[in-house]
Length: 413
Image 1 (cartoon, one colour):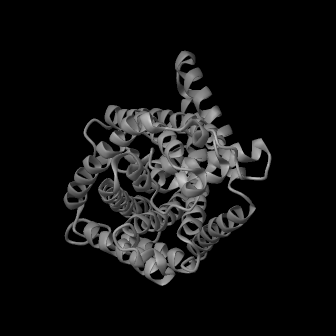
Image 2 (tube, rainbow, N blue to C red; image 1 turned 60 degrees about the vertical axis):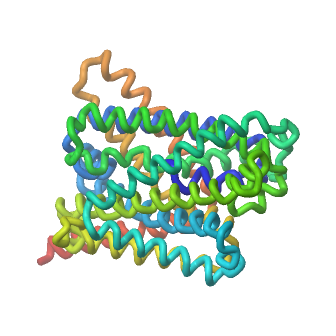
Image 3 (cartoon, helix red, strand yellow; image 1 turned 45 degrees about the vertical axis):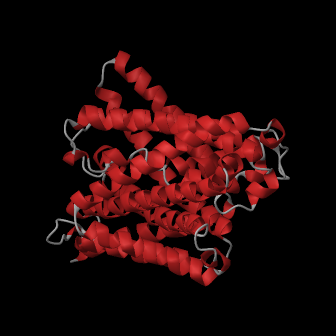
């Protein structure tokens, strides 16, 4: 979860002023509800490979399973494009020419995507090694900024009025939608559950405790960044954490924090590229995705699924190369969030279906969690905005048409 979102979101949310803190609280509650949903699903089906896809397929059938797999897969490669953009923003602290040229920033983003495509082609052990290293390097400095920076917060910055011209409700909805992007990945422990020791316990704990720790980190750091940087400076920053560190630690700290953010985004990119191969692999093993996604190399990595997903992430990044970094990030982030919300929504529906056979005392709490999660998902879907919903609908309909064509071919052949 802790990757590109928290490192660039403060700049994206700057126009909403202090209202963005309400959005963070709403998205945090929604993320914890969804973590509970996946914890419950993991307890009910601990060996299900593919996470949201597997739960939906087992509870609601192949068609819904395919829709979830497709939507989630789209979300993943859109996420990877957004992460690459965020990483480029922080690399610009060291190499300003990268962010001064749209062509240079897009090229750098493409290079990062394909670098970690290569890492994932080498197998799971290499991926895990990179993840362990980047997790330590990103979490400790984030907490330092939070605990030290809180003493430098200025209330006039933190409580600045919004520049956004819409209503309060529209602002809360927008900030909740945008900040939810930073929690994408709360379900990722369930994707490869069959490779986890004691998945019924381990996966649920990872999802719930990981989300709780992330909520604390995000809210603490958001308060600090918003309270240290003037709103106008924050809105134009491509590296808000580095700029904030410079305020209370001096110029040299800016480069240290920028390096931390680069490591965090690289770690997130590495992890999501792993997932973009594992999910289609699970769907291909059930014959819902083309067989090519199920092919692995000598390192047991689903190389074709990884590579094709990276091609699509590269295409999204290239199509938006002419826009500013913050605009690129905002569009890709919102599209990714929308694409993930459909699997989240259907996972909550799947939980409702699965608990019908449980005893009443166990059923009620799980049912309430599922219903509240569904309401949250529907709200945020509408908060994505018409333009993004149109793009997302086109991508989803493309997948459903491919599924219909494949089903028709099977019946007629």
